[in-house]
Length: 284
Image (cartoon, rainbow, N blue to C red):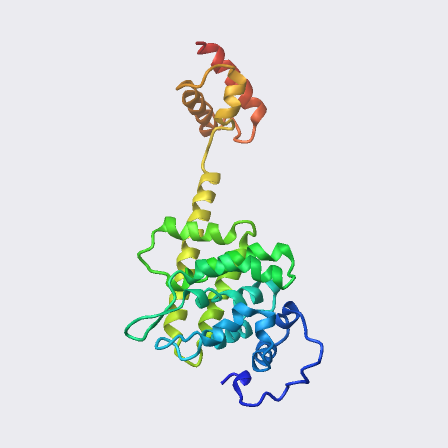
């Protein structure tokens, strides 16, 4: 059981003590202590009203914790970097406006990831957070459901698109942050069973790694294979003529010289001399 759930919080301080900023709270060893105290003392609505709303958002019957308690667990479960902690704090912020209860008594949150992503800028600006953190956090909130929703039926193209979305503007770090948030999201449901969810994430990561390995092998094979020292752009510059089938013929001629050992693949100067000779013989 998380310690912030105990009936009397042993670390509560007088209400008039100076409060940390949201970022300072997020970067403590256990942010849940501070956010739980703010909730218990009635300060949370004035600090983060959208987060306070989650106290009344049930996740039954799928999960026993309400959306607020789940969020605190996720924040505690992720590494203490500003981007990851903010993303964890806001990953389910859209569950407030998205919440509906079905006639069967089930809590549903359609499109809460997209709704939450749209809420991120205003929330972080109100908390006086650095502007350069907003887009990385917004993107993580918008993508946080994708890895844990992985299905082996996804195409390779879909996998590549997701990686591109995660890495846009941030490279590999964006991808690592998305996976870290997905794992923390699952850990936020403990002590409920999460083995199935972790297995899905493992399969997802293994699939992506296989695709990366295939792409690297293809690149290595291409780099190692014999090729013309001059590409089509350079041949057009040398020839000063319109593009046409002659480009492929000339590249084949240069490749034949490479394969025969008479021309080194990196010997651009000799290749250009040979190209000029070929062009003279095959004038338009």
